[in-house]
Image (tube, rainbow, N blue to C red; front, side, top):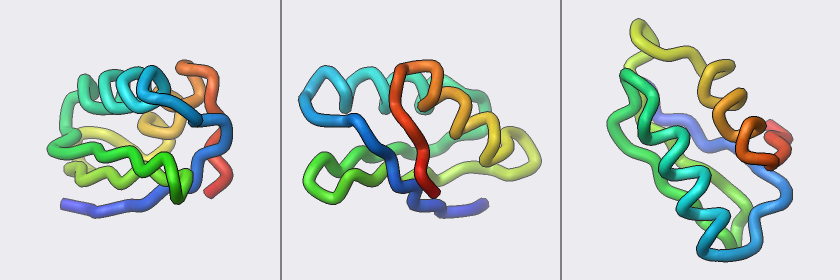
Length: 69
């Protein structure tokens, strides 16, 4: 299991939090996702054999936000 913190641009409100947490949280293999608006980060705990970091980044991109790292 991996714990990864991604820097994300464009998140500014509770809707952003719900959109990102809902999208990433629905991926098979993601155990936990937590958005921190103040820091502009998304913390994700996931099983790398079930879901890749690229798939997580794509789910965030699909919601209209830019993953910086």
